[in-house]
Structure formats: structure tokens, C-alpha cells
Length: 263
Image (cartoon, rainbow, N blue to C red; front, side, top):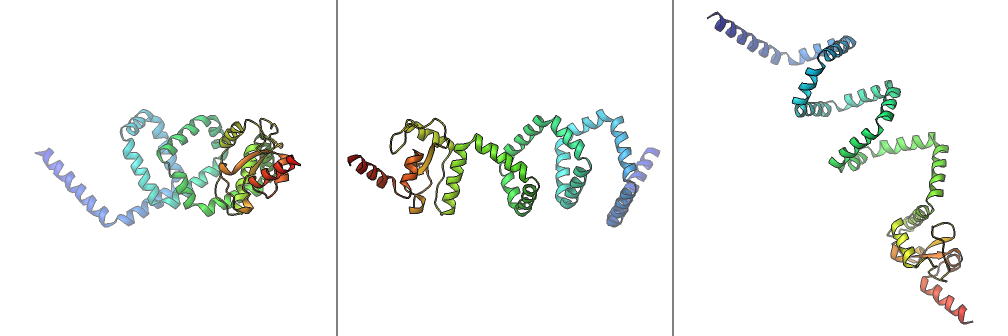
């Protein structure tokens, strides 16, 4: 009988506490917030001691409630987006050196985790760029201004190591400026080199096996005369032929070469 009365009393107390909380929710939350702000370090220390004393228990709980915890964190981030962003920023600045050491020590693991995340969220980069376009542009601008010499040196080394890609990039840029369509890849250039068997498209001179300064990438129909920047409109030539061809079409230039041969 005493047990029944005790259970009844507890149930009534719980119901009373619930009604009080529902009636004073905002007041209680504000009071909790103030207490937390005033005792932040003490609370953090207590949590740390509890975790160290109950590490196995905490790990078991996380393993058993992984989805529940992840969903709760997701709801919190969505409801406190600005607060979370500000906290992450302050934490990053306060722990920059520690974070850098960790990233260097776990570079492969971080790269693998990031790879898996992108595979699971293929539209992440595109969505992030759309949502933060102006912010990223400003950040990139600041970085370029602060690292001009470093960027120039990196570009120089890249151009020296990739003359074919640099030349293809210049052609794409020219095509964009002239409003022309099309682009091509390094693989397509290499395939074209094989098709021409390493010889100049116009005079038949032997070209080198790499796209150095002796190999020119020519538009058969020049961009200035409405030609496109697709691989079908590309010919690999020696420097002499490309410079002599100038703004002629490939047919006009071949006719000119034939007339010179007959003379």
C-alpha cells in the first residue's frame, strides 16, 4: 500500500513539474542560458571529468544511439546556423596551430572522409558555391592579393610542366572572348597527334613528340572568321606554317602551298 501511495505521489509531482515547465518554458530556458554563460568553464570541466570517468559508457551510448545523436545535431545546426558558424570560427582561430598539426598528421584520413562525403552528396560543391558565390569571390581575391608572388611562381612551374594544357587554355580563352563555341582536352590533342603521325598538317614536317614551342595548335577555320574551338577544327602544325597561314582557312592555305609548289 505504501509503495502504491509513493508511486502515486511521484506521478502527481511529475505532472505538476511538467505543467510548470510548459507554463514557464521561455523563462526557464533564459535562466538556464544565463547560468551556462556564467559558469561555462566550470560546466566544461565537469563534462570533461565525467567523460574521462565514464569513457566506455559514453562510447557505448553513442554507438547505440548514433542516428538519434546525428539527427539531434542536425536539428540544432539548422535552428542555430549563425551561432554555430560563429562558434566554429572562434574555435578555429583559437586552435589554429593545434588544428594544423592534426590535419598534417591525419591528412590521408581526412581526404578519404571528404571523398566519401562528396560521393554521398554529389551536389554539395555546386550548392555551396551558389549559396556563397560573393563570399568565395572576395575570399579568393584577398588570397590572391596576399600571395601574389607564390601564385606567380606556381603558375610558372605549371606552365613549364604543362605547355600543351597552357596552349589549350589560351585557345579556350580566345574562343570565349570571340564568342565561339567549343573546347577540347589534352587527350584529344594527343589522339590528333597520333592521327597526324607526328607530322605538320600542312607541310608534312616532322613535329616533336611533346607540345613545346615548336608545335602550334591551329584553327583550320580561324576564330575571327567564325570557326569553332572543337577538336574537329584543330590542326597541329609547325610554327612556320601556322604563322604564314595567319587568318586564312586551311583550304585557302593548302591551295596557296600547292601554287607555290607548281611555280
